[in-house]
Amino acid sequence: METLYVICVGVMTFCGVFLCLRGRTFSVVVGLTMLSYAVNLFLFSSGRLSLDGAAILGMAEEYADPLPQALTLTAIVIGFAMIAFVVILAIRARADLGNDFVDGRDPPDSDKLVKPNRGKA
Amino acid sequence: MMIHLPILPILIPMIGGLLLLLPPFAGPRRFKSRRAAAIALCVAQVVCAIYLVMTVLSDGGIMYAVGDWQPPFGIILYADQIAAMLILLTSFLGLCVTLYACAGTDVQGKYFHPLIQFQLLGIYGAFLTNDLFNLFVFFEVLLIASYALLVHAGGKQRTAASVHYVILNLIGSSLFLFALGTLYGITGTLNIADMALRIPHLSESNQLIAQAGGSLLLIVFGLKSAMLPLHFWLPKTYAAATAPVAALFAIMTKVGVYCIFRVYTVIYGEQAGGLANMIEPWIWPLAIVSIAIGTIGALASTNLRMLAGNLVIVSVGTLLIAFALRTPEATAAGMLYLVHSTLITAALFLIADMLGQQRGRALDFFVVARKIKQHTLLGIMFLIAAMTVAGLPPFSGFLGKLVILQSATGSDHVIWVWSMILVSSLVTIVALSRAGTSLFWRYASTNDASDENNVSKWQLSGALLLLIASPAIALFGNTIVEYTNSAAQQLHDIPYLIEAMNLEGGTQ
Image (cartoon, rainbow over all chains, first blue to last red; front, top):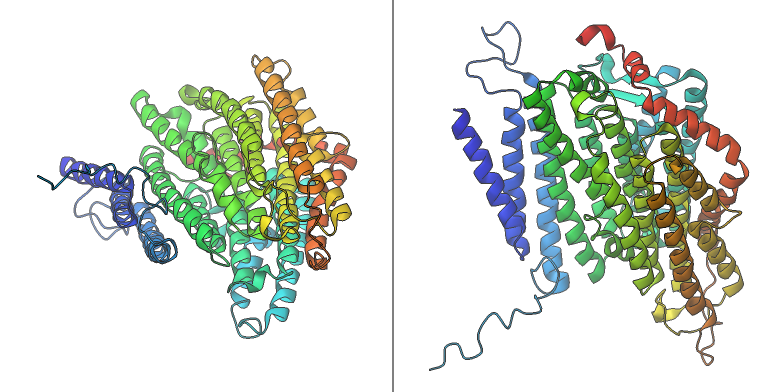
């Protein structure tokens, strides 16, 4: 179970970081969402993974650490609010700046990326 | 009431800020009552902060268990001398900023005053808390208020700067949570004092993980405090924000620096066994290069706000040097410098705004423009601010830099510290004289300035309060140096902290 969990968190973090490094706000927002999901999972696992454990003493043979669950809940709430804010901000930036690049302008060499004779015989 | 004193600085802006959203104060028409209430709230915070400083001075650090959940399980607020001093500084800055904003900035968008209150709430909380996750929560409170304040009054540049600022800080928050998860997984606690007790007893392999967590935390605090190489967002963001907001942001970088002082003195300090002073070798080069980059940026700035933003980076570098010396004397010097640099950079942002108002479309850019109407008044204010920030006597900048230079004597890095701080001061003087010359003495002879508005009384009162504080610090230098000395002793005295938390018997 640990291995699967670790791979999940790792892959999600990787995707999040990769998307955050993109140039357009949409992929960055998706990247931030991925990153916050990954961090929620990671926080949850910081109290060790256990099956059939109740968070309240006396409810089960084994008990799970309740604190990471509280931390994860807080992190979910805060992360959700922040993502909502950044979505609105990205839409506002699209309207104000006229494009959806994080830098607020087209990359200076974007026209060089496409060869001028492309599509011609 | 007495026992609830440490939580009052958090409660006053929280409840007050919420009240400002309700009918007697809400709405575009009722801005007068909103202003009165906001100023009253700020005054209440200053009074409360002074009382807190007095109490802490006479009784020592106060531990406050929220909901009476005792450490290490509950969330603990801990007001020691440094926290109390910084709360006083923040509340004073909040008062000046609110006064300045009453000149009209606050009605350029909705909810200015409530947001300022929430921002202050987050900053107080970050200073007071003794729990790492709680620190994260207060960081988020101050950040989300700052996101909204940054786009206050709208405009293209603000939106563009805001996108960078928000995205960077969201990534920072994620890293903060990764670091917290790592540290909690290893030590099983979030209480800073309790963590300090447990770090030395970790096994070899767990120490590595704790080191990784601590290094991640350094990235987060470095991002907040604009430490090199995480400083690129700062000049643009501060230049884009409205003047009162930029002035309030002057304390935000100091929150990051304070967290570095707190976490890496208490948790990873001298007593931390294998991890003792683990980030010190990193901080040295970063601090020195921060000063260099900030100084070069100051020379290259094209307007006064950008210049002030770069001076913030220089001050962060100087503070990091004070941290890297790792002695109580250096910490005390750093705290004194922190108070001075916060006040004076805030004043510079306000002065830049007032200058910009009277120069038409040239704003505060260093170009030939019309003559400033109130050039004597604003010129004197700029001169005082420039002398203070460059560290010339008789103002507080001189005292601040002097104590840092003194505390460096005897250290191995003394040559670096002295040469870097002194050369940077000299270059700062050059940059500021160039700024002053082109702002005040080079103007187009044709344009008549008489149609400009005078700066309002609100603006003057806010900026003057900040400026007066600087000679006042120099005047009462002895008292303040004594205070910061004992405050630094208290910060470095880990057994005292653990005793104040009643932790000794419980966890060992």
